[in-house]
Image (tube, rainbow, N blue to C red; front, top):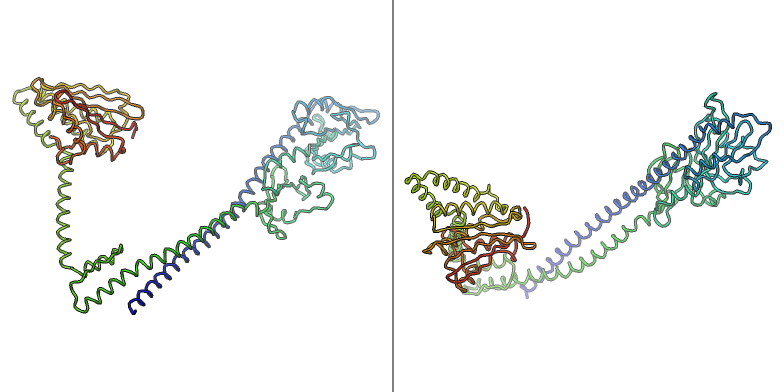
Length: 585
């Protein structure tokens, strides 16, 4: 009972500590993530709203500047100025085809509501005969007229207003006006008034969206509202905007004091002095924050449930082998030394304790024996690796042949063979690179065959027929040479009539297929089946590179679907296919 109580206490402590640790991590991560998410999302909302408002400001400035240019060109028209210079007996209003044509030519018929020119000489020119100025209106007392005269030729933008000086017309417009200056005498000839369509300004503002309920309005330098989507409500006093806060902000964004749900973004246009104000609702801009927060909470709850289950299982797994080991140790204390200390556990520490407790010295001896065996296996592996990289027999035979040729004073063959041997080993090293172009691999095996041709003379002929289009594709090095060497030493070397080796290569769909074919002794079906499966130690060729090693290297580098495939007919021929992916390094 005492042991059971101890195990229970251990399990309880492990469970509570592990669960508390996971809970702490989850809570800390959740708080940090939600805080960062809220901060980042709100910053992004401010940035998004400001960039949208700036873009709208650029669109408005481009439009207003375009209208200013058109108005300036119109004020400089010589025909119009000549009409305004003439003295008339009494004032009159006349349609002017030049104004009408100008509006059409400027392709602004939908943007310009009306064009008026009020001459000092009493002449009033209009672009359409449908307009009639109200008799009781004194044009010279209107704000746009007074500002135009005061600015002496500079273009003046007027806030949005109703065309109340025209009979039977209640359209909302904003105006561009300027004094027309005589180009000769520099005297004021009159005032030009171009009334721009309020709808055009509304269309520009409606091109952007600030959520489903967001909107944009424009104010002048003096704080007058030039455009508002609820213009009628503004003028009737049924709706107001916090213009004082907008004026204080100047540039940037802020959250309204009275309505924390509103994000107000302010951008002032330098060219016009207008201020573009974007009003968006934070609950719409921060929709993603709410959904992400909910997702995080759900994931956290799932993690807590999983942590609860895992804590229970882990505490039980850890405490159970400890209890078993404690019982065994109690038996050992009574003198029972021949006890079985095998404990069913996956815990490495408990297993190590049980093994050490049973036979420490014996286990050390076993481990030392295993270490020695591992060292022997390592040395054998290193030896095979050296055998796979260097061909001592081939080098010895090549040098022996060079000496023999030198003694016979066959200098040309000595030079050719020495040069071929140098190029062969240079390509074998390939600067330590494992993956090389197929062209280099073909060159490597070509020099190998050239050396062997000098050695065996008429006993060996060869032919290399590789499509140049595959030269640029990649392969691992020392693939063809072991296959050619195997064909030479085990296929055609002992033939009385000599043998022939043919190397070919082409592109087959998405693959490259290289073949090495000889007319040697061939192989039986059993030999063909086992050549790629038997142990490397029994498939090492004369040159030291195993055919199986080549096959496995190809599969390691390129995948199981690539490698070698043998075909053979005993006594006639052998053909090996090398399949590679058509890739470039």
